[in-house]
Length: 235
Image (tube, rainbow, N blue to C red):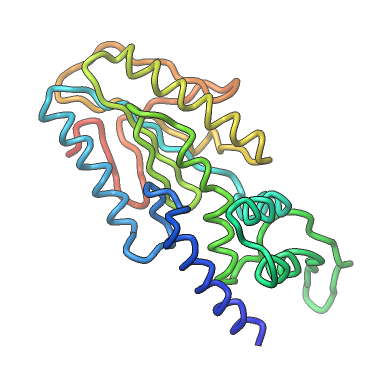
């Protein structure tokens, strides 16, 4: 019965978020009318447009570590109140998130129960919507000319132009804002999964340097975004 109630509340919550245009337009994951294809087609279009205008494209593919487990529950509840969601729905979601514990079974043995302070319960339809609410601000903190595309915990930022140094400046500024946002929300990027690609129609001798916090990001000639390979020539 609880799962049925979760679906009812989730349907109403999603309607409220979409009807009031609260979820950012560049967030493609777990939404009606959006898909991985929408996300990937958007990225490809921007790169092809840049090539047609003899521009370079500097892109960074970022991955947030253990997002579902690390999200602050209090922050989700605060965001819901800021959106104007209160009453029985807010109280249900509060009870849905609180007083949860985990236990490990090994053969016939059970560990002691451990309370979970952060994160959303995995396997629930309502958790997916709460996740979208939690990361929604990350879609809006970067500014043009940097283009941001988000699918679940995968964030891709890119910038196109004729000067590599200018692209480096704008992308680095966006990375700094994303890094500060993560720290404020108790999250962090996986530096091992974060990759940079400089795409161009012609040969470039200059490879920019980008920092994420204290880590220098690595440049590759090909990166995988949502299962699709993007190389520096878009072949």
